Image 1 (tube, rainbow, N blue to C red):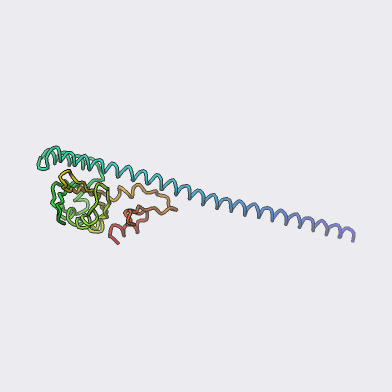
Image 2 (image 1 turned 60 degrees about the horizontal axis):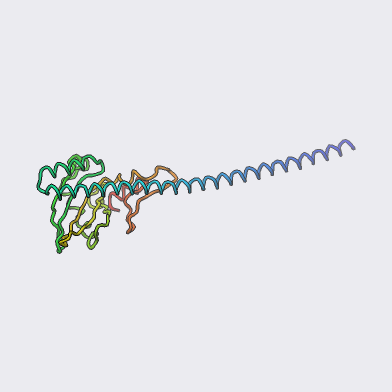
Amino acid sequence: MKLGYQLGITSKLLLVVTAIIVIAIGSVVYIASDLYLEESINRIQVNNKDSVFNSSIKIKNSMEDIASKMKLMAQVVNDGGYKSDQTQATVHRILSGFDNFLSFYIYKRPKSDKVELYFSSVVDTSLSEYDLDKSQLEALPLKEILEVTSGTTKEITLINAAKHLKRPIISVVFVTTTKDQQEWLFRADIRQTTLSSALPEYEEITSYVVGKNGEVFAHSNESEAYKIYQGL
């Protein structure tokens, strides 16, 4: 009987110690899991912050480069004359040397709502790629471009030309006024990938580029990107 009593106490002690160990392990696992979850969330937040910053820098640099080349082409036209073959060749060479460019236009805008196409240059291989002709590319987005740029000067504006062309194309436009109060509208059509290629490729992060009026110009999700191309 004495031996049985001692064995019972030992068993109880073993059970208590085992329970303490199990609880301790469970607590450690819970804490470790909780810390891992918190660390994962923090890591995603940091990645998201870094991705947004890096993407914005890439897009900013791309748009500054596009604006710079648009001004360069405008200067070439101004210096060489819009009817000159040399001017046309130089502008076309600038367009062709920058893969994101599809076309460049200069419009003379009188006081009326109508505009006069003063100069144009289009990369023909891009037209073939998108199965468009010159008149479609130039004319279809023009109405919205004129509406959006009415009353604005020098501010770079993006237009989702994809709504009108059903192709992943964006129009970059700005207006300037000369000393004689003549308004000039400058426009370049670029590939939508100019923006989308700058977005991060992390699966856990959904990224998109939004204009000041809330319109989405690029999206990391393919189905959402397709809606943008279709103007949906």
